[in-house]
Amino acid sequence: MKKHIALVMTALALCLVFSCEHEDEGDETSHNTGQNCLGCHSEFKLAGSVYNTALTTPLSGVLIKVTSEPDGAGTVLATLTSDSKGNFHTSDNLNFGTGVYVSAEGASGTVTFMEEAITSGACNACHGSSASKLWAE
Image 1 (cartoon, one colour):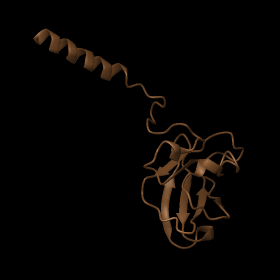
Image 2 (cartoon, helix red, strand yellow; image 1 turned 30 degrees about the vertical axis):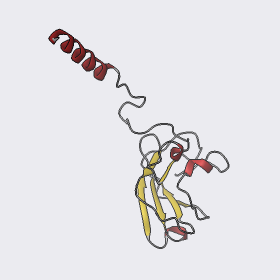
Image 3 (cartoon, rainbow, N blue to C red; image 1 turned 120 degrees about the horizontal axis):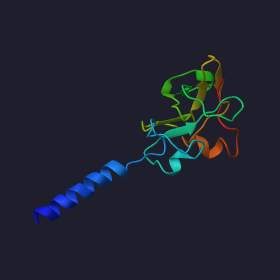
Image 4 (tube, rainbow, N blue to C red; image 1 turned 90 degrees about the horizontal axis):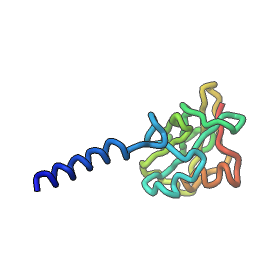
């Protein structure tokens, strides 16, 4: 019996060591850039991906702000930063009400504002399909 338990414990240890390979080494929590994050991550309230101005490369370090009024005015409801895969997300509750506004600020300091209010946090559901990818400079 002791040999059986030892064998099972060894097998479990080997599984833990060798089966935990991640698709994105060094950034284990971020993946599927450009896809609708909320399609799988029901805990996210707002999530998306941001790219360079050529719309070819995911962009890290972009400051994403969600505000209650257009052009960054009003109350700041959320502040997020894109990761090394260009992805950003929050699980914090956001009151979208009749709409909130989003801006993106890249390393150049240029802020790009969405002209229209959003009522859903599924950014990539539109950006990259029916609307241009989200970008920053």
